[in-house]
Image (cartoon, rainbow, N blue to C red; front, side):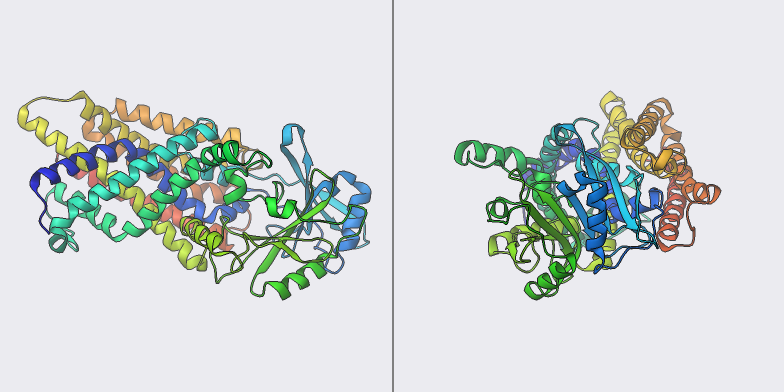
Length: 523
């Protein structure tokens, strides 16, 4: 395919500058995003295990509810029945204490002991996984969530421009360079081949990420404007309620809210009958939890969360059905996998492609690799630009402070992100209860800023090798800290997996530091 050189030069400049502006934000988003593919296991790993009696059977759950409501009347307003308790989540029932301004307070778990007496516990949940997820959504920015999301949307737009311009640049020599990875040639050629290979073969993934990131970021402002102009009778749903509906709190869809329900004095169906009724109406959907709450009129509403392995889901890991708690009839299937209207099914496809919540662990691990590969793609893009500028400056005999600044910033931000996330994994062992959000954020941003400062203080020749070595050391501390603190059962699968990944990544960073030391001074 022949494209005029003038057009290619224009697109090359566009690709370079857009990539430089967005690259470091995208590195943080993709590196943290790869980790959030297993957000719930990481949260369970970092949090303390709760000690409770064995859960009662689903058939005996009404007795547990009756005793809980007698001792804690506030639980009636919003509570959750768990259908598949396990070692990490041994509770059959939980509720959240309401706080002012609509916020949710401390969770309380409930069970019955051998004598049928009510036993409650308040779990201490680490904010480790939640922080990494927000770090991913906010492209590493420590600003308020709404402000950071707007920046994320702009970065997503730049990301899309960089992808399209990169395709145009690569097209003329695609047949020649498609499978070329010349690791033994020049330093520049090695980075360029790796960059092109990652970009082309993961292009569909990146296009989906760019499109959905923009939709997520600008979703709320667009719907707010739409609501102000066209729909003043009902409040619009927020982004979190549309794409990540909470199982503990949140408004039901307008369709379900407008459905006629029985007064609160009537007795709802037992959880076992709700599950049986749902099985008849939505075969293949596996319910995981029943979330009960009261609307503004004091009527009981029910949302069932679960999954169906045959379909993608609107939430990060679950689909939802809104049920009449008195008859068991489905009131709304807007979020129910396999039972959505065509429009909702199309939208769900985009959400599922972003979350990777289809195909089980095979797809999730694939998204982990694509996420890490994406982070490396943005790093190599910055390196290509920096090295090209350095070569031109060497030939001209001039040194640019802008090139030096970006070189330091890239090394500091990339290693600061990797080390900061590794540091909060280590911090989960010694912070109280695995760390609350404020403490976790302080650890991450403290390490991140330290690495950026070091990048500007170290000499160019030693900068990358030293920072990569420090990143590898902090990452290798994760299994060391786990051993020293006797963190739970070290041979349990989640612990083994996290420790093995930490070892692999730490060794890779040390290897990369050695390579950088050998290549120091080359451009």
